[in-house]
Amino acid sequence: MTPKKGINGSLVYENDDVELVSSFVQRGYRTTPIIYINGKKVPDHKLKQSKPNQTLLSFLRDEMHLTGSKLGCGEGGCGACSVMISKYSTIQNKIVHFAVNACLMPVLAADECHVTTIEGVGSCFSTESGKNDDGLHPVQKAMVDMHGSQCGFCTPGIIVAIYSLFANNTTKDYIEEHLDGNLCRCTGYRPIWDAARSLCTDIEQEGEGKGPCGTSCRECPERNTCTMDCNTQDIQNEQEESSSSSKCSSSSILEKFLKPQTTIDWNQNKIDENNNNKWLDQPNEMFPKELIPNQNDDNLPIKPLMVVDRTYHKAGTWFKPTTLNELLSLMKRFSGECKIIVGNTEVGIETKFKHSVYPRFMSPSESIASLYSFSKSDDSLTIGSCVSL
Image (tube, rainbow, N blue to C red):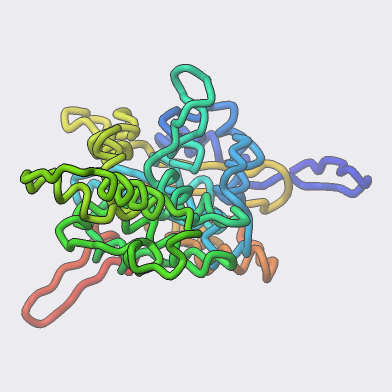
């Protein structure tokens, strides 16, 4: 291949796989991924700029200018870069939602997926009027009310992580068990957990009668100085109770005055008053209908993908085979020069910190069911190589 002259005058050779593109296109391969972000399809001219070695975080910040997701550790440890991936699982026959570390996930691994960033969760600006209305998502509002954010660097990732958990389960035990993977050096985590707990649908069944600090407002030693919503509301209720000269026999009204209202109670009431828990359906409502396969479509599964980085020699080529035969064919053709990508927790670290160079990446489609499922019999257990923990 004829070399090109680089910036410093050195000769730069293009990726040799450029010559293979036409033949793969004839075999039915696509050369442009399909990605939706915050409910909208990413334009093709933007997607054509994506590269096999590029992370999803880099694409979001540099190409899409969505800078809410932060770069912290760069190795999937702090969670500041968390975004939610939604896709239709052909194995489970439903839309699945899960949080990922965008600093490790390759952007091309988001092919046929919907990406939700912090900008897509909610905004202080109303999307309808454009005015400075309270358009915050309940998760964001709870983090504000519970003082779950201080320096704010980790907050977007934590909010998306909580948002992703509520997209799957809304019970207190589930959220408490799975809320991890996000580091915060300021809050000590208690206010963050209180914000998440206040949104659980089964919180009232447990009769939580304490404030976020763990102490009943009327027994708190800082009763006169505490400015939490639960305490200020309860002080108001106490004043109304003492100033009332007449007694009411109605148990419901009496309970309203005598039962201290915690921040959790106040937050639950506010949610029920404003949106009646409709916010829980937001992830499914935002999911593009174009990504839900039509059972009557004879073209399924979707065409395989091939993306070539044309910038320099062995810059990287991305393959996404959709059948087992195609996967085996690629492995045979590029034996020893093709790295299989699933979670990218290993290759992402090697390329970033060890400066490893891989000429080709292969990301098997979920349509290859044998790789993403497991089965057992009386004497054996078969686990697909792409099954997650």
